[in-house]
Amino acid sequence: MIFYLLAISFPEWRPHFSFLDTPHANEMMALRWLHLVFGIIWIGLLYFFNLVLTPAMKKCDPQLRIKIYPELMPGAMGWFRSSALVTVIVGLRYFTIHLSADAKLAGDRSLIGNWFGWWLLVWVVAYVFIYGLQLPAKGILDSPWVRVTGVSAVVIAASWLVLALNGGLNVSNAHLAISVGGGLGLVMLLNTWGVIWRVQKRLIAWARTSAEQGVPMPPEADRLMRWNYLTARTSFWPRAIRDAGCSHV
Image (cartoon, rainbow, N blue to C red; front, top):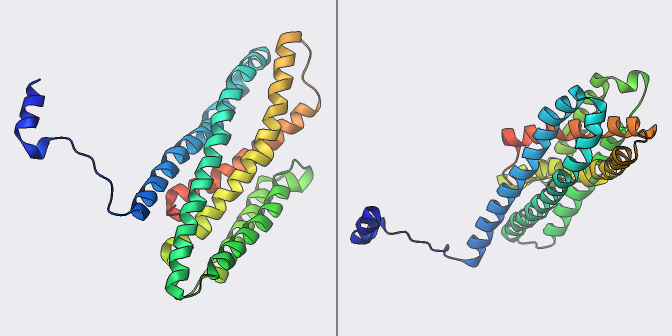
């Protein structure tokens, strides 16, 4: 009550809220906040899966793990895949705003489609190679060094190529930064929905059946868990690179 009386006595202390000057500025602010909030949820769950859940599950009794898994993972995966989708969609809108500004500065609106098209093509092709490097394998192909070297080479090549194709005198730093950071985000989104969620749906169903009926997990479960692990690890490192400052999204 005392604080409230003091606040209304001094106009400078009164709470106030106002939007920015233009709708464009307000949209940019909202996009950044949405990207940040949902990105935190996405990266938080990714770090939780890789750094906490996986090591903890390995130490659990198999019977206990079967009971925990179908209770924990549906909700966690719901937040994980939904936050990933919102983060990337919002980021793409933010990216196109920068593309539009650069194209306007260059005096050629067709550059928006050209830049976005090259960006999408480069990272989709890159993901095809990354997808293959994440698949369970035997022998030398299962070596962590082979996987890390291969994925790193693909990411470096894709980053260089997209910067070479989209670079120019009228291209902003934000445009170039998002070309790389947003590409890594797209790779992670494809992993989240194209591999991790597909695998988790089957593992959750099998674990629930196993817990309720007392039947063993199917033999294919080991391969899918290995694939999920490799894919999650691949997504973990690009996200760490982005958090270190590769992207201004």
